[in-house]
Length: 242
Image 1 (spheres, rainbow, N blue to C red):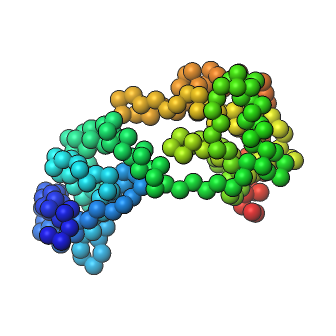
Image 2: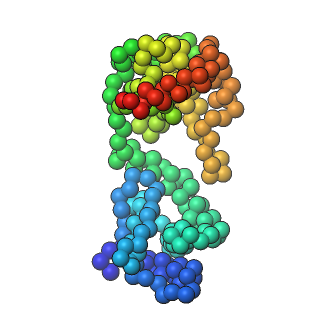
Image 3: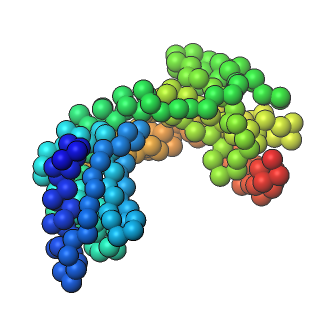
């Protein structure tokens, strides 16, 4: 075999034969691909199946590769994914070792677009420092704060724990947006730093009860929520014009 991944192509042939009994397995090529995260793809081109497995799963045991083959082929053929295959594969990728490896890989290869914390109207660094002193006793480490590269309306703020970055939508850097709204969005993302994501039974919890409780401590919580609700259409129009 030209590629080490080709040694597991038999699992894909087996999956095709099991899920499509009326046809013989098509030619299959399996390769590893340097995806940043835990991603895999399967495609059919000119009658040949091309499988790309994320590099992070190169050391996955045979049982995991067999399960992944069943999952990918089932999705390609629009069949139901075997429950046992999903269980075996999920157990591997959700293991602490693989999660840590994925985090390190994302830090190494992932890219985050950084513009500036100093906007035309609001300075995110200054807002962070003021909120940190008022709500966190100045103890919260400051992440990289940046305005987004373009205006958005669906996501007004985002915290990337991997790159220790908080991105705030450029749509809010306007004199038409009250300061308390920008502060509220920044405060929300600061709470993601204060309340890290929890992993329970393979599930991610970003907004825990403790998070929601602390969120309402923001002085203008209700006013900010109401302003965003009433102005989402204006933000949408502005984003589309930019």
